[in-house]
Length: 117
Length: 108
Image: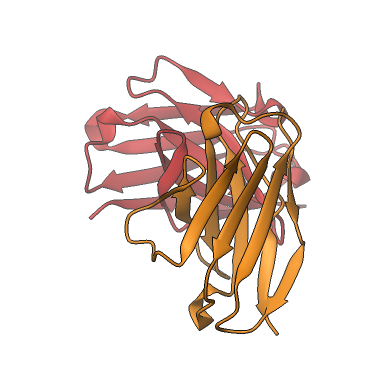
């Protein structure tokens, strides 16, 4: 059974940093691109970043470029999102998701990041 | 960036009725790379349709997707109580991939 379990969310002050993790199981993690998708409270979905199987290609939505870094450790079946210089507008539930030809067939349960003073 | 506009914003129907949800793109979606998701409160989204018209694994056949170019439709043929949720479309044919703002399907 495919499972994606996020962790690392919490309350952080504006300008602060946070590192999210996603533990993957039930599939060959190293064979898949992986993504982070977020959802602000009461709002819709927004793709944040994705990373190629070997980590050689990474892409970001414009609003997080230069502040967020996606990475992975295939030996640990884990995906990460390092978030720096956090802003109030980064407040959201962050989902780890597995792309299937571009759509997402598996999602984690999400981890809430709240940026507030 | 391709902007996806979903309509209506809220759809009020009764169980057993037919639901038709629309997703319109600001530019043509290449190769019909369009997906539909269902999301219930407190839950992650669930993939329903990919490639505009292919049902994902385990999705009942009352869900169907159609369309191409800039106009896409999700149809639920006979609403079951568990179908009342928010539905999102996503295009993944152009970078950045984008989502619509959602349609809330509520019980009338």
